[in-house]
Length: 337
Image (cartoon, rainbow, N blue to C red):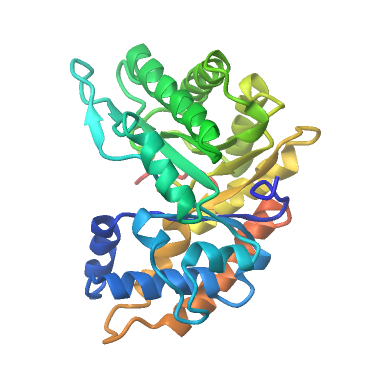
């Protein structure tokens, strides 16, 4: 219930050292453990951040780092602010043979041991991502079944170890598919997910869904309004989302903040009597503009980044409340020229 607090969302800062290192190095920041620690502390301790955040997803490295403000490990410091700390427990992507490049995540075999370690370090939830693509013959039935069964097993193991599972089927924005094709694919994926979770005996009320927004492919030649896209998302929820799951936290998945916030706000305006809390769990949409502030600077401009981040969180929270007003074509799909 705390994670699904209305009007609040999740800051996703679970990138591994290599991934965040590429983002740092692209703007001239040296990728060191201390720079990663200072940057994440800014994400957690920006004044007012806790007014907009219910949870934070951490990389395992961050679980064991300390705030130099309080001297406390980040999980404890977050809990003191009323923000629930969680962790990304999956390992590497593995290509499914014979599928033309479709994938599953590795790490289920040793998951229980890692979750016990993460819980002892202060985590109260975990998040497992299963990436999928839309294309010719994709997602295949094999890729859907393999990934959704993995998510269900992960969720069951989490609950057995006393952690809340966030399940994340993540459909890529890449491709030229239209909105109707995306709707059909997402209904197939989510229906398989919920059936797998029920078949495995997962306690549905104790889970959170983190999912992509239903969107046309980035290269789709057909235009769509933000209302078209929002209606598609509400339709998919009504088609297959169990009422027992308390909340949906949409990932940004390649959308910028303006588009993601516009779409989330209109989804909330159109959901009417839908029972779910619909909010955000954003990483790149919030963080990429922050990294741009680092260009040409000898030190990470933490104060400047904090000021911008606070403004971004206000936009995200307004979208979660359905009161953010998009500008111009924000949230619309404008075909590439």
